[in-house]
Image 1 (cartoon, rainbow, N blue to C red):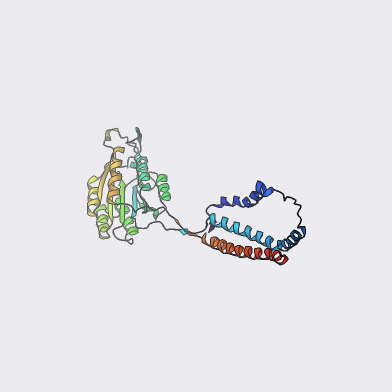
Image 2: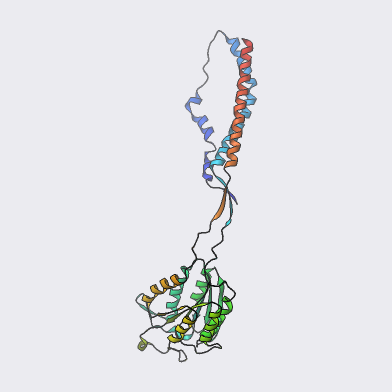
Length: 335
């Protein structure tokens, strides 16, 4: 794409005309003189008139020269395509528990009680913002597990899918093993040492085909790291049973085993004070790619009009010398 970096410089186009029009020195009228050698001056005047067409052509050349200088000053450029986003980050899948137990409002955030789901949404939204250069995907699981968003660099879409997730949309029970199995299917063909799964749940495995430990062992064979995050408040006496089939028992031992088998780590979140430590630890264990702002390749073209202006200047000097020679010839002949 061609453009001028400083197009506002073209407002100077009429500047030479304005200087000539309003400069006092150029507005002075010729003074009539009475001289005894009028005939000689008349011969010089007629010789000067013969050079007028040449000077008119020079005026046009001066105008072109001025436009060329303005074009060079305005910095003509050709903009190339944007550089690609870095692709050296992680392939990171987020498996989010959307069973009915995530409806319980036993979490504290900003001095208010909120549901586990709302708490997790807030945490994941801030976490995703920090993952520059990673390909992110989303798995939602309850009684069944399904892929909500495939691996993508479009982080905004993943954030939107997380915000739209609602407890109970995949059933009331929890199938952690199936969620891990689905993640293996999506991550096994990705580059080694870049395969990461973050499993977020508030309960124990109560349904599904695969057991969580067997799925974790299979994930370890494919070099997939699993970071497990348990959600729940320690104040269980304040909980109210909203759905009878929902499990309030967080199987921490199973989550620890899953993380240990895959060389990952287990985290427990009971309130907002745990979020800072998890952000820092995950970013240290799985650093994101160094983010570089996409830039366009810019090719400067000012040298072309500048070179043309130089050649035109040389031509004008030659024309000026030629005109001066023609102007002085009649005078020399009269002498």
